[in-house]
Length: 554
Image (cartoon, rainbow, N blue to C red; front, side, top):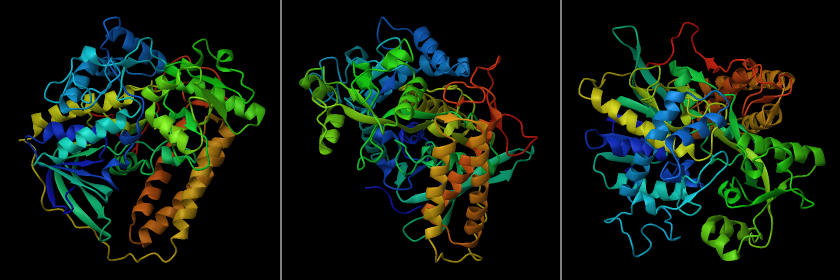
């Protein structure tokens, strides 16, 4: 059971309950009192649904240099080399820590780490025992996984560890509204807490904290079709922007090439690992098409595969393409992809005999809140980790299974930074309570649902896989009008979870469009018909709430 009462003070307030947030909580709880907030059930974050795995250099034939090179190549000139090296160099450490926590990774003998007789939580396996698979963009097998439900295995393990720790408070049905900041003696901005909506009694509560970490995930719910859970509404990015943080590279929205196409299969992802094990992409007539687009065929980076599918669907006017792994033995498929096999079977698709209908869907936000290598934002004592952040790892295109790795490594670094500054950081106690004296209950919730639908359709139609300036300008005009309506509605009515998500999502959508309009080239995930070539120099897209604002702390 999670704690239900929200005390007014914590040492560390973590907003978001996925891999990044839980890792930071576990790494700091021995010296701090920590709260982890979740908008819904703890499992509603993206981590729980991650199928593929965690990229790490464990094989003797692999190398850190090769993993770094693959990541830089996928990022099309925009990855920050020092960040890539930091995260890849700590990949084995991250996996080792997860094994020590008890995550049941699949082993080379095909069993789960703690499900077979050879190993137990008290006697964890060697890293060399772990089974490695291969995904797009990777030159070696380096994906550690728990069959095809890695995210669920990681989440459940870390959640249980957190539940058992006396200093960690896991709190469901709490939605962060806004960060609380003050001016420091040196003129800098310091984060001292947050206002939080208690959904059970619909009141906004004040929480003061020495440190605040945003681990709220990305903003893929800005799009009509997405592989993400409903909570991916860009909350951390929006809150950080309103507080004064800079953001970067929000034009790079990764569309996963293969989401199950079925009217009742909401947001179900078909992992890239199927293609890593030999699945082919086919047109309705059964012919393959990826060899015409890239020499790496089905294992090309995701941006290339998604654009190829989008191109073929538009060329033929078809609703989907097909992923075919039926040439593999049925037992192999069931053993390696039990979740996908079972889920597809619910919709009448037997993947041992039938092709899987798939379409691209918004999947990952590669840009985010600008942070340094310790996860610190432009604001003192405010951290951003995981998909919420922009570290420079992903560049113009995230390589498969690097995102979970980033969560762990940057959370480790943020935890160490907090530990180093913990004793010297005071807790602010004299903060203003939330003022709800001038707002009323809404009597027209249809406005929220209508604007939500219009926003997501606008983003899908005009800010999708293939863009041009005419579409982006049209989207900008529509989003601006929506934003005015939503802000006016927000100022006059009591806040609800749906209203807070809509307020955040329309802001982040506007930032995505501004970022896309400012990039006069096609690079990685940002493809525009008006500027189809690469620019001579690769540069990040930085947006600042205030024109004179400096870059993030180094």
